[in-house]
Length: 109
Image 1 (cartoon, helix red, strand yellow):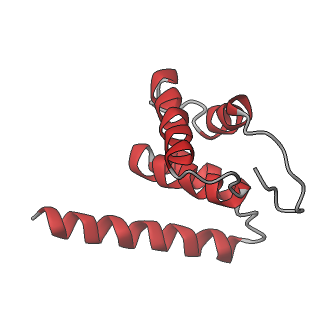
Image 2 (image 1 turned 135 degrees about the vertical axis):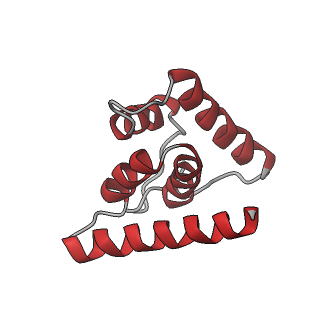
Image 3 (image 1 turned 180 degrees about the horizontal axis):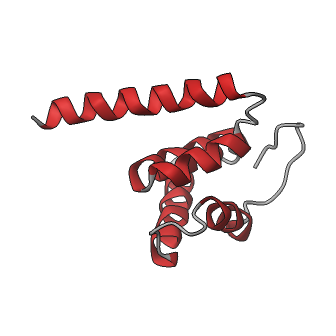
């Protein structure tokens, strides 16, 4: 895995789990669901047949999975992962999340 600073490290399932557990603290998300997210990410990486993947790609995969699982956990994870600097950045993310939810609801109608 290639980190933001360009250094490389081995994919660490436990590191992702730690971030997920923090994001999902006191949310209705089970450890089994978190294990499934990590397993899906691992499978996706292996199936891509690439030797290396960036940490930002992994972070995006985690956020996509959380967005579909629990929106509060998604926002928590995104706020740390994307390093929100201020309330405006945070509100922009919430607005985009709400907009995508409204669009998904319209498709279901």
